[in-house]
Length: 361
Image (cartoon, rainbow, N blue to C red):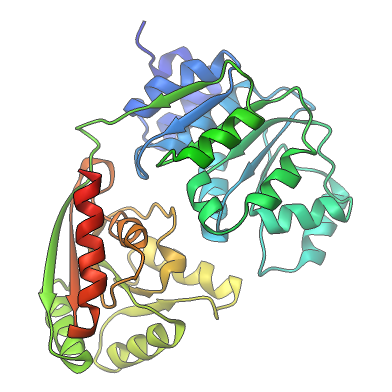
């Protein structure tokens, strides 16, 4: 029988209705029935296909009083995004959801955990490990474990922290691995931490495939890049745009230049306080800011609705970073555009990206 949201409890159905989720995406259709059976599951699908709902819906549905869930995510932005999405799903379920990540006061986290441990804990590996080491977070009641964007967490060097945390989880639990790609390393860890009968659910839906029009604009110098960028922004004044740059100082300088010329722009980079980062993201999500100048901190796993244009002001050296960047547009099968401004010194980076795309076909 084909899975529909009607098979869920009324409280989840009401929450889904309020956030205007009328039918499951293909990955949710495949993963949720397996998860509701209590099986461990490796969920493989592109970002923007509804993966958070694929693990979040069954966890909120199955969570019993006294049980808890731990969700690990690679970045604080993604942890906040997951927290907000699960709070939407849990609005009628009396399930508390809180997030914990670096860049904020550990004292605040300790104070919160002293009062009560939330039903669902979402966090980055470093901060979660710190809270466990301080004995503020005890894992004995945690019956669900989610490793979200596992491929990215491994790329970022979190394997040791993840293994340390998972080794302290109860053996009797349901485990979700969530990843856009499943290289050998992820298969190895999945076999180590999941039950032998875990299911690998992978969906490649034509309907949800990103449709991204990739354009390369060759420029003579950095000065010409800025001129070209201004021309593109002028032609796309009403669009939601992310401009990716190489370093923090590039983000600051470019945002300053564009603001002086009257563009509605903000910078997102690692030097911002957590509060400021959250404010910038909120302004961009709600459309009060149209252009985000970002370092690669913003390219990892974020699901920002309505981004129609990505501009690579600087090309990354790693082709996988390029794929993550342009994946911020063309979400859920919508159309998007990615424009790369390429100076002569970046020819090698462009060649690497083109070779990588050939291998992926």
